[in-house]
Image (cartoon, rainbow, N blue to C red):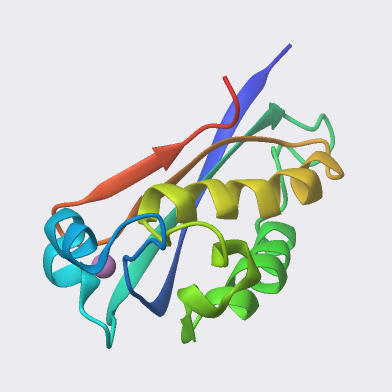
Length: 139
Ligand code: NI
């Protein structure tokens, strides 16, 4: 089996506030610091999608880049770009940390890529210059 990997980077901007109903106001403040600010704040999230799969004998590719772009645009960008993550139903019961955002992006994309005979190997999201998060599916 000739398995190869193809990765592509996308950027979207979104707002969030780190806050959980499970904690008191003081505990939220102590846990999340300025990220608990009631008015929220924004990030330019850089999302890396790593696909793995058999190199197609005819095309020589793991997945057609235009096809991946179409899927990511429809499933991820249109959902999250210029949105308030706290208002998305995924984050009604979960804090929109970038750990949870990585899992959400993975879970949205994985079934669509499986349909293209591609394995979603990993999602990596850079939240700031110094912070990044990765999720590679259930272990
Ligand atoms: Ni933040």
